[in-house]
Structures are given as C-alpha cells and as structure tokens.
Image (cartoon, rainbow, N blue to C red; front, side):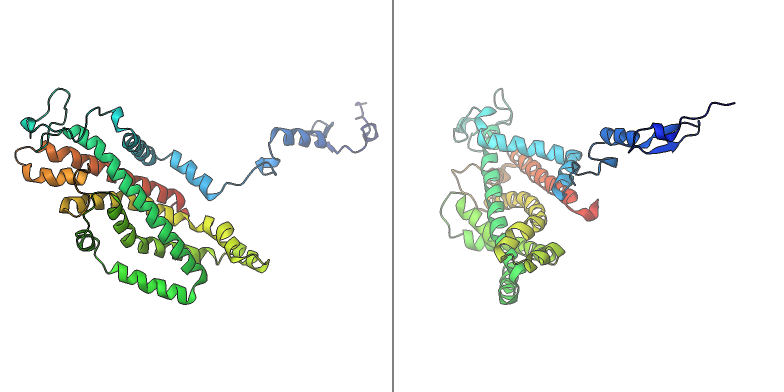
Length: 331
C-alpha cells in the first residue's frame, strides 16, 4: 500500500497547512513570514516604512534627470562663483586702462583685446558678471517677497482687499517697463545698483502678486484647508502651514524665469544711459560704449554681449526645467 501522509495533528498548533500537488503539506505561515522579511515595509513595499513621495521630492528626482537643468545649473554656478571671487580667473583691474592700447585686438595675456578707453575687455567682462547677477538676484527676491505677500493676502482674504490690489496692479500693468525706466531713472544721479533694483521691484511685483493670488485661491479650496478651518485653526496657521507650502511652486517658477529677464532689463537700461553709470562695471555699460566702435573693433561688443546672452539663456532654461518638474499636468 502507498505510504499514508503524516496526520495533520502532528504539526504544531497555530500553523496553517495546505495540501500540495505532491501530496505533502506546506507551511503557509512560514512562507508568508519569509516573504514579508524579504519585502521591506510589507507586501510590495507599501507598509509603514515606505514614505509617500511629495511634489518636491518628485520634482527633484525629475530635475536630476533633466540635462537642461544640469547644464543651466552648472553655468549659473560658474557665474555665481566668478561674481563672488572674480580674481580667480581675472587678475587685472577692470578700471586700469591704457589709452595707447585703445581698440586693439587680442594679445598675450589679454585674450579679448581692449575697449575704447584701453581697458582689458576680458577683465571687465568677468567683473561685469558680479553687477548683473547681483541686480538680477536682489530684484527677483524683492519682487517675489513683495508680490508673494500682497498677492497671497489678497487671495486668502478676498473682499475689498482683493479688489483694491487688483486695481492697483492694473495701473502698474499699464506702464511700459522701458518707458517707465527712462522716466523714473533719468532723475537719479547715483551710480549704485539700488535705484535700478528698486525700479525693477516697483514695476515687477504686480505680475508675481497675480500668480500668488491665483495659487492661494486654488489652494484654500482644498479639503485639508477646510478641515483645518473646521478644527479651529487660525488664519496665520492655515496660511503658513497649509496654504503657503502648496501655493509657492508657481511663484518659484515665475521668479526663476523672471531673473534672467531682470538681468537683460538692467543691461537695456544701462545701454540707454539711465541704468547703472560709470565707474560701475556692467555688461550694459560696456555694450553701450562699444556700439559706436562696432565696425572698427567688433570684439568690444562681442564678448560682453555674448556673456549677457549666455547668462539670460541659462536662467530662462533653469526656469523652464523647474516649471516642467513642478507642474503635474506636464508629467
């Protein structure tokens, strides 16, 4: 007679037994335990140890895989480094000029040649990055803070505050930026960067306030905000803990793209003679002074204009990459 399988009573109590195709039995409890040990956080990695990814973690993961973000970030990092320490790659003085070398081309130790005053174009191009980056970053921060706060408050409270702010922004939107700069900055005699930065903040905050207002209006309609309100959360707590972290992404995207625009605007105003003024070293000032020598000495215009174009393009590319990473509709 064929050998009978061992009776089920011989197994320890509490173990689940299931017949197998071979006529024996397998311990499902033991197998399941081994499976759970091999799978971190439970079956399929969905246990308590598996943390859900947030919008910011997903965005950072996408940015690290985006070559446009990597290239633009490296360019911007290089610009920031030479803005802080220009002497790392330029040992000369941007204000040290020799009229006997005016408009001369490339020479050993002077790869970009000399400008109309006999100043080294390479040194002035390197030191000009400090002014342009400083103006762009400070103007962007001022616009983001002022526009973000005013627009966020208008979107959260609504009512008369929202109506007044909307009419004020309409007035500012009606002012052409370049024409406004010609009018407002023409009466300024200071050669510092602060009048230019103040002008950019004055005419730039309405755009960010509109973006912040719409983002806050969308965020405050979510269920978690309504639940916090029902639980008695104060307005400041809802704004800082629930609404602001979920409404700031569009503001960051627009501000990043606008940074390159502000750098170009500073160069435009300096070119027109109402922005930064000598002895400040700026790409816009160098482009303005080189425009009259473009036929005889095109190198005077080529290098500062090329540095300006690369800088603006890098910030715009960075803004586009950040926008694609933070916008769930583009995934």
